[in-house]
Amino acid sequence: MRVSFGFREISRLFGGLMTTATVPIPSTDLRPLLLNVRNVVLKVTPEHFDQLCIDNPDLRLELTKDRELIVMAPAGGESSEKNFDLVMEVGLWNRQTNLGRAFDSSCGYDFTAFGGGKLSPDVSWIEKSRLEGIDLVGFIPVVPDFVIELRSPSDSLKPLREKMQDYRRLGVRLGLLINPKIQQVEVYRPGQEVVVLEAPRAIDCGEVMPNFMLSMDRIWS
Image (cartoon, rainbow, N blue to C red; front, top):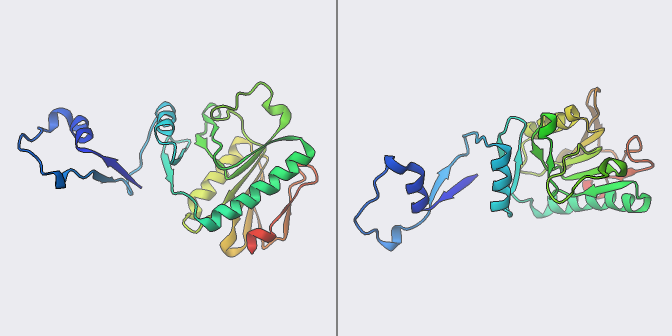
């Protein structure tokens, strides 16, 4: 991740530690300075995180329970298509049953009241009665019943597993970490060991979403 600062921003940032040059700067040097923060952990408050989301609507941002900022690159075409298929599967089942509300990866959740961060699962679902009186305009302050995280080719596995463990700790009833490259699914449930499924043709989600079988045919293809 790179953060771009112009000359004026650098001047304001360092204030009295920096004297602005009085010699005219050639126009060819007025390029933005790039601050590389690849190896630095950035911590922000939940309030500052909300402002960052407003100021950077094109970025995919998340905040961990330790207030660490995560900036995610846009998904590639292959991952985006697979994620769309997963959203469609959940969405069609939900439209037929009308048992809850389904959300895609652009939906943010506010878990700060439960000792968590602000996260955006690739797919999520909440049973209808749990959303009564809840404002859905901003980040949803409810722990979803069901989540899916889809590993893209650029995703490291360790952070995704940590995220899934956080979902389980917060009370997500069923969480799926799908790894298309090796055709593997990790299943997370509260108070239970992680179950690993090798190349399943479908995943039975009926324990949370009645009669719902998540087909994996298009994910493995």
